[in-house]
Length: 265
Image (cartoon, rainbow, N blue to C red; front, top):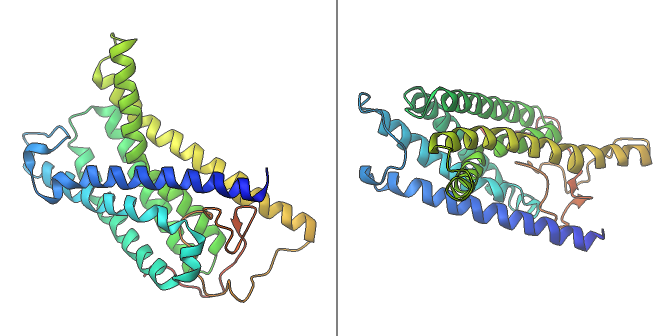
């Protein structure tokens, strides 16, 4: 595959990711932004008065994080507008923290069943842990590790998109081919699939698009590539490049932040 073909392929994937993220973010947040309780799409526990509030507090910042994420992947934007990238990273971090805290409360009182509660608890714990690791690594100037942890983190943020995709496919299959399945069966399977599949895809991307090319470069040169002057001081956020060719090789930004490079504060 030529470099230009690879670039078009990755821009196509990025476009699909960005469009689906923006669409689901707006779809998920809008009823809660206007505080329309009647349009709430999640079953509520009638005995917990603050259940709706916890869902709203989760939905709004989580949707903003989902919206921000794809643009943190674009190398050209990171290089040209490092201050914007850093501020967006700070907003993203705050959104994930707020969304996670609210999600823990909402999952505790979920009426969707124990299996779904466990899936959401695991997802939320992993969401916070990967964010903490991403913050720790960028504070220490470990840009490549920061990128790895942000790929993992955004894959969990993106679970809100894949959950709805699996749910829609599952309902269609249930109505056409599997009438014995209940909606709860489909919802439980979708919740777990959105977690497990996203994690596997993220790890595949990390290994094949970040680690293998870096290992190949090291074998060829015999040394770890040093950062260029234009790379220094550029904080890199979520994921590898969107193959725009700016500061990348083989789909991997090979820069490494200077000691003391600072991340979201």
